[in-house]
Image (cartoon, rainbow, N blue to C red):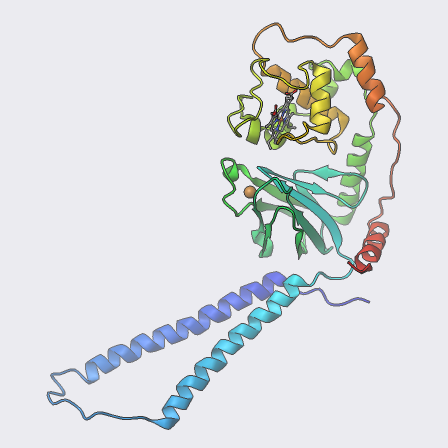
Length: 356
Ligand code: HEC
Ligand SMILES: [Cu+2]
């Protein structure tokens, strides 16, 4: 059941050039005729007014029929391109996007992996299912290099598909003016070879399943925490609301981390870990359970580091033990799910054939 995968980039570009070409020919033709008539019928050459010409059936039919055909031709090119944009090829890999003020998060069909940068294999059609939480605003998902763009609408799933022919890094933009952090709502598409993609997914899963050593995780200077790049994680996931300096200036009501005033869920490192994992009900603070536990610990330390003063309560050994038990943090990997792309695609195709 294989069909040729249309080249949307080519279709969009050729529609553009054809329409530009037709418009160009008409523009030049009309201007030339205008100038020619201006000169030919100038008053100096024709001092007497001409007689009134009335009706010319052939001419009138022509100037209605020809432009209509041209416009229909443009429409037809558009319809073909539109059809290929809206028809997801069989066997497309499905990635789920959640866009919210002001970041993108992609979830992959393999394992329970997610990332702020979109990773895909080259030469495989990818369907991106676009979602935004009902409490959020409309965003736009734009992949200029692949000529596709679609609105992301809270509470309604939309989609687009594209296929990257070769490896590389490409831009992704939000195209809706979605508030304060709109200009930061930018990410990238990373296209790997098929093997490279599998390897990436495998690493992500291994990383997620890496058991946590509580002593190292609670120590901001341990190399396991340092290696996480907490600052970058913070900028990616939290800074848009909590502000670059943890000042809460990004979104009204977001926590200012520099003082302890008014914390709801507790201000010890272990409390912060819980908040980062499950969020705070009824507020804009959502949980980030898709991030690996190590990443969440790195974020906890990043947040705590904004605090000015010496009186932040320390987590007791009991707190730490309780957290470990609650989240089974030191357990050995549960699953290393099947990773072959072929296998994953088989499942996806089956799923996509279910009636909706
Ligand atoms: C969409 C905006 C938004 C994003 C993104 C966001 N937060 Fe929050 N966060 C909030 C708001 C709003 C509050 C305050 C909730 C309240 O107290 O009503 C909050 C509160 C918190 C609290 C305090 C909880 C308490 O006990 O009072 C912590 C800790 C926190 N956020 C950490 C983070 C971290 C870490 C990230 C990034 C992984 C993050 N937040 C991303 C909006 C956000
Ligand atoms: Cu946006």
